[in-house]
Length: 179
Image (cartoon, rainbow, N blue to C red; front, side, top):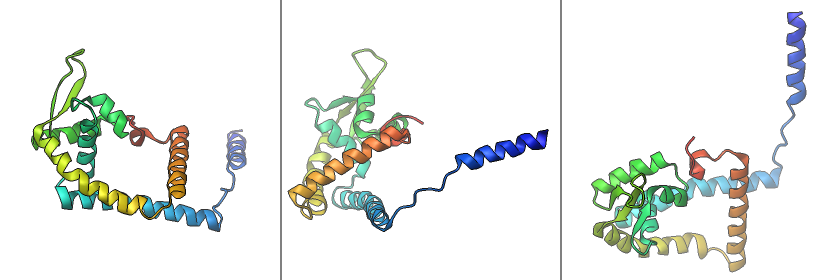
């Protein structure tokens, strides 16, 4: 009886396992081009920022987020959502940035539970100094190689892919949620 139950279980698993729908030649070419872009873009951005400003990509992203607020102050949870990061990732980075004097952190005066991140004068100076070279780099590698129509198509493709990732449930930290 036990052997019979095991055989039925195996048969059920075999029925559930389907042959994957393999990528055709065009799809494989698109996938490999996208993978190459994804694996190359972030390191290139990080190298440019470190070389030209001494900031890491994540540090620049935090400073840019803070600089977009008129007061230079953003709640930590809001910053994590805006950046698409988990709170623990942001917290570790903020600790290092605070030690460098780029930001300050304080309990939120609104309710005392949340934490506000504030741009310091050194942080404001760092983002002001880094932004021109960074935008020039982004323009040269992302926008100049593409026509306006291609830029629109890239935006649309990125939005569709991002939505599919979020719908898949496979986003955890990459989508700003803790695992």
